[in-house]
Length: 111
Image (tube, rainbow, N blue to C red; front, side):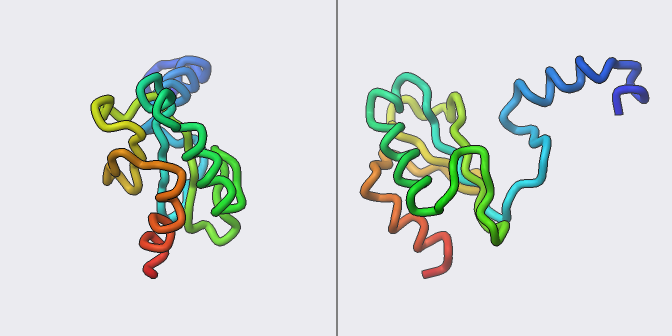
């Protein structure tokens, strides 16, 4: 692609790695993104991340073996007034706490 636009591979990589909307490898059927910026971080984002990791059996940046869920920690989801924000397939959930994670995943899995 860089050649078609007369751009170096390094420039293309820098753009693709900077923006959260670009994925450099395949993602699962569902994309779960957890805001870890300062507001969410102060309201328990790390505990939410850990709860998702434990429930899914993967770490941030990974996809479940069945290719259903990709888990990502992101810098900001723009909901600083309602932390912690979790985006699932671009639908934002507000005020998420670690204890909410099992129910969120059950709903996601169609339970």
